[in-house]
Image (cartoon, rainbow over all chains, first blue to last red; front, side, top):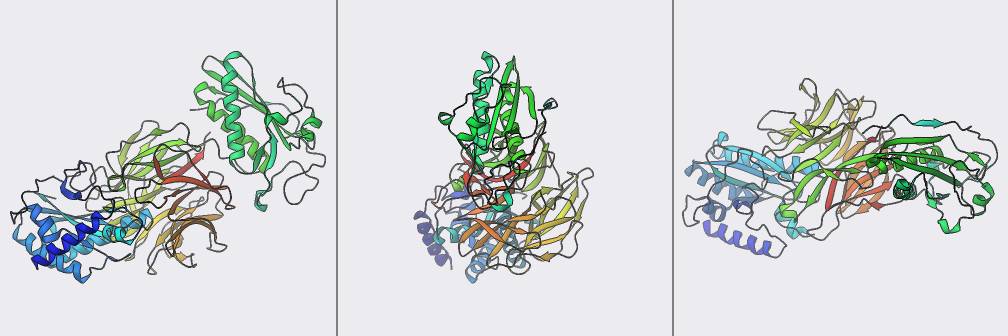
Length: 176
Length: 444
């Protein structure tokens, strides 16, 4: 399971490397964009990522558990792969209850701006509902959508768009 | 910025005599460009440099003349005759017009003017002549104001000329608010900009520390409503353009609000509110802050826009399974689907004339800007590209501005205009990338 996720993550990173993606390590908060890419306080505390070798660290969650799930075009239904990752997320989050959770929904760029905000919100909600159904306390979680405004991979084809249709589980210490 | 009341210079408006017109059916009628026919051959006009009343006026006179020429020729409806072709010289604003000399070079319209500058004040006067009937078209007009507003003086003259010849309202003396975009796509920085319709006099209304989206003018042009992520989450804000002070309009945490637009009278805002993953439309009374829910469906209802009489709202919804355009009463209630062509329809915007709805269409990997009648009939696509979206209407309902993004990974979006005939596609010059424009009213 864990090995499978690592392998998937490696594939994903290789995939990213093929695209013009200066923000590959996006959600770390070290790029001056804040933990969520939104810039601007918003009650989202930033947290040290810790060492990925520490299985209770955010870095471990991001890398070993996997903080991102992907969606099909114009869909917010969780794919079997997404459900597998979220199941692992829920187990980890239930064991590490000190983290607050912000679920960021995103879309690809092949749609209109307003609709994509709403679509990203649907995706974030789908993740929240799954985690909630698997025991993660609702009061630890918040959702946000960036619509199509925060792609992580930028090129003109499906190889990038498929990476941008995503929901990212972003952890921070304390209240969300 | 205000202007003194235009001073009317008494000139008889005589409309007799046969003239040649560029419209398909030339007939005994005054100079007139019939826009409904679709204009293919631009009307030739002569615009001798406006006469400088004093030395201080020399440069403003030349600059204002250029603004008028850029406005008129920029419509694609008029063609400026080069000064090198002129037979007559206009040396005095009040000298009699040698119509034969202008007729000989096939000028259908002649615009003369004069500019004088006293300190920081500028006075611009002009006259428009129908060359083939040998008559002035309308009375002469004079505009006075601060010298810093010289571009507006030019726009005012061009609006008057455009309006007299076409019979339609003008649109040159107007502003646009938009989202300026800089930096790579994955770390895009955004701020709200405001500029003249032609890209001049650009200023920024917000900083670029937060995502900002969807700035929309009120009909009186005094305020904008927009989306900002400054709180960490997207919410709608109202900004007074005189003070640049903003206030957040909604205070329900755990929700997102976006896609705002004013009602025509400016008293209300319609917008999308997302809660629990579902997005519905609400309307807020801006004086009391009270919101009323307008739609209640398990679908994405967004991009609302009022009809100019305030009685209806057009919006997009995916309640049928994909984005389509619907019209409902402004108080909510049953919505009627009006888009039925192939593909998805989004971002409907009601024309200020009330006759058309502009939209974004997405089909087979291409994006289009189009217009349809308010019942959905007579759909016409005006543009097509890799990514076109977000139409906004010129105040006279003749021109649409929209966002276009070229393929190429990290490209920046740009603003374009297109005539509702589908002709005259042009990029609006902006500083960096620009998107999501809202075209404001004609200035007073």
